[in-house]
Length: 296
Image (cartoon, rainbow, N blue to C red; front, side, top):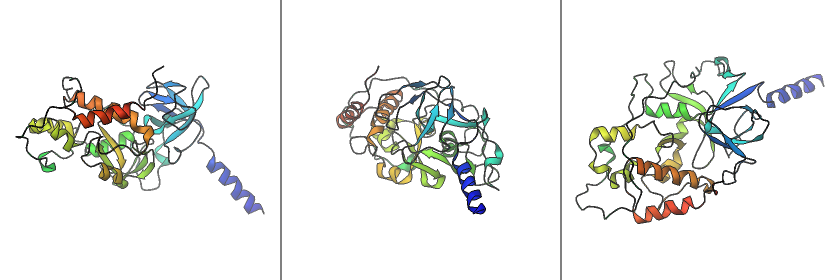
């Protein structure tokens, strides 16, 4: 009987949130009454604002933490927008499993790539007959801009994990695990091998929208751009493969609650890089934007 009571007590302790667990908003994030991103938010949690965590892990499969703000509001916040802390600081190194080093808090972002001039988003003109076919081999691979052995894929995985990541090697070059909320489905993923780093506007679409005219330097800049959080996102591998090089007229995030943010990011990236849209693509983006909640 005593052993059963002791076991029950330990299970209760394990289920409780970590003492004084907090998180800092890495960007503006909505505080919501429930875990439906289509519902109007209670208010915005501003970038840099600290909140108390009322759950130890994001909920499955939605990807939200239950949090309490400094002014006493309780609600749900999107996990990828929060970086977890304990007792006002980063999670301690000792919280990692034995033999698995923990990443330090991410360093300051790498220097942003020069922003291309903005252009109004509009349906594209007819595709010129001189455009060559798209070939992935014509576009650069991931680079390691700061020489720290973590290429662009690893940088995105470190950035987007809701908790400090674990590495697969002592040199901390390759991410092994963390907690990611897939921005296309809302599913929670903990194994980095199950993730792909996706160009929200894929390279094949970029090629057809004007990228075929770019030189090698411009293509490398696009492939590895970390200056916009939505440009590169960590997603489930199967969704990355299903999306491929398709535009929104052929593929949309399976979770309709993600359509608004996906459409707005697609439109912004196209404008920033002066990339045109076909009439069908433009119509699909407009359809997804129609799901956005009204601005207060």
